[in-house]
Length: 137
Image (tube, rainbow, N blue to C red; front, side, top):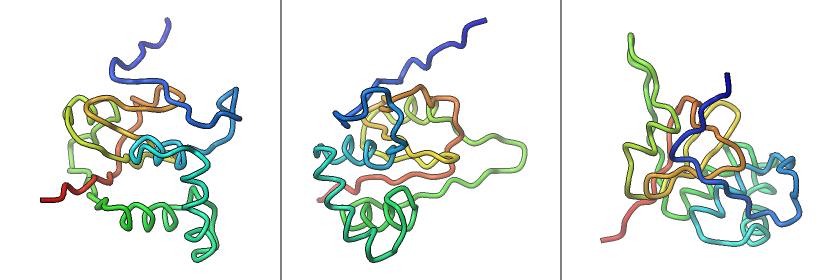
């Protein structure tokens, strides 16, 4: 039986050189979506963070500092006994407004206004926490 596609998934690939979606650059892709910047611009902006932390751009120590410096805050999701964590699909459904970066197992995905944006359907993945763009008042 064929797997059902998530209804809130939108294909998104800002890396013009990754023609087969093989590069493993989910952090840069997600940051492109939530910042509206080009792939190379985000890559260049991450470079000082990479040098400071001495880890690759996909390391949480790198992208979390970048997100904080760009007006995002972290919200952890605790797994309550007897209940399941939200999935990417259910999170997007419940967050019809706003801009988020979700942390799931071995992956990062962008959510914007009720849809999640990725090169593949990661809707079944459990969300461990998320970054939300803080709104200026």
